[in-house]
Image (cartoon, rainbow, N blue to C red; front, top):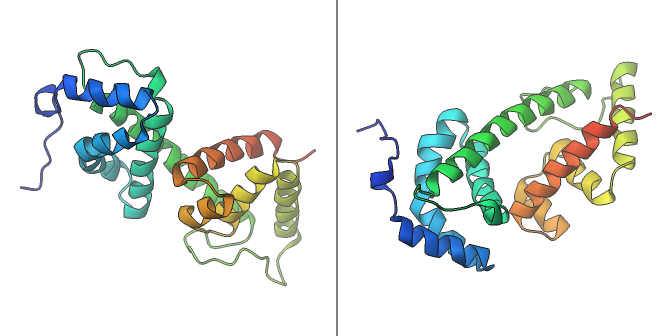
Length: 198
């Protein structure tokens, strides 16, 4: 049967079990996150993320980030009589929208650098006959990056300009993938606040 049923309160984990996991997370027991993922990871992926982001790699990134953000924000969450699934679902939906917007920005950045935005292997160096506008765009981007926190600039260069995967970027910055996603998000906001450079 290909149609996936939508979650209802009756087919989710009992609130008492969820409460124990939420309490453990609030006490800093990060291992409890694996219970949440085991309960709801597949459901979030199939029902929430993949229908909105039908690219498997992007969908998997969003799924991982959903649970990383849930762990970071668990202090803000109050479990009442409704499953934590619906809170996770909202985080995932917001991340889907953020990812869609970021991809649009990435395409604009690639275009500004004279690359084919559809090509994941596009060269990130301007060609010898690149137009003045393309060179100026590259110079403006580099000038903006030089004004950022060096960690932010490194994250942006590696992920957006060099197209390195999240695992490689996280390893270079000596952080978890979830923490790298947070750094990249903050770096993007910082970049937008300073671009174009004055």
